[in-house]
Length: 366
Ligand SMILES: Cc1cc2nc3c(=O)[nH]c(=O)nc-3n(C[C@H](O)[C@H](O)[C@H](O)COP(=O)(O)OP(=O)(O)OC[C@H]3O[C@@H](n4cnc5c(N)ncnc54)[C@H](O)[C@@H]3O)c2cc1C
Image 1: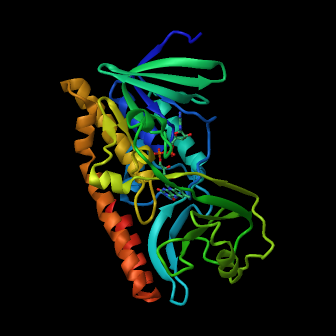
Image 2: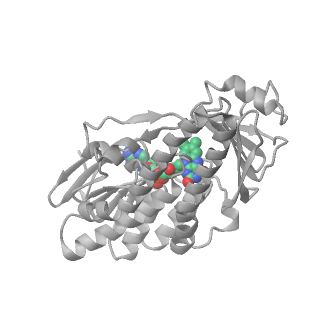
């Protein structure tokens, strides 16, 4: 038997940056707010953990405070990025960038949200959502079984494989990419205070990145499997052993919804249910950074909830208007990504130059 329904003004599914930002702002605006997180907290996330781009860099201190030094992982701040295309000089992008394990960064943001009154319930997986004119009902599974929750407003911050998105748009076909992360002990003879982006085929994709965190170095990317031999050959120059075995390996999904967002085939809100961050497909083309867009869309969702509660009307419509700037950014960088394919046709040098330009553009734009 399902126990009686617990009610909140706002329920946020997912305790990542998008969920924390949305929930904290809603609580600050006086709403009784609950985060439901399927995993045990603190939890890690497949992510380089770079606080990159102007939005992430400004929203975190403004909303959560300065990142405590203990949250960052050595080297603490990267000096920037290096773009490696075979046969041409490495291109360097200077850009001071905090770096952390997501477990620590997200846990700190969860704590700051809790201080503002957000209730956080972990090990609670949202399994079903139904919507009506006055709000929505959620069924969750936790250690004790199934429970029901009801809220006037729902924020789906439940990442790339969002259950909330599926409840709103059950027929939407979503393409996914499947990046893998491998963690090795030690360090390589390469600048450890830079994130290194490698383009072994002299094409914008597939790519992989290499970065250091404390006593480890990590190799990440969607093309790691197909690039296995290239990775060994390229990294051998920096001391990567042919016999090196990762301490661990994990992976995740990225929802590729840029086309659908640009054409309007998918609008990430309906009624009083709003999707933010990766659930909304807002991971950026080119760099595939998404902490900044998750934070920004989380805050916009919270603003929309406040306005809808104050003046009436659906929060979704208000949110979609607020989201226009973000959608323009997705469109702009999606176009730039296509330009990179043309640059590759003009040779490695042209590709390296344009990759550097495109990365710089995303980093300074949002
Ligand atoms: C390899 C890789 C490297 C990356 N590196 C960077 C980087 O350096 N910088 C950057 O800005 N971006 C980076 N990104 C992108 C970034 O990780 C995401 O865009 C960002 O985490 C999105 O935040 P979010 O809050 O939307 O979702 P998430 O951080 O994914 O959080 C979603 C949360 O929802 C929970 N959840 C899921 N389903 C349910 C459910 N049914 N019920 C309850 N809870 C649920 C999940 O457990 C999770 O905690 C990287 C991504 C990848 C794949």
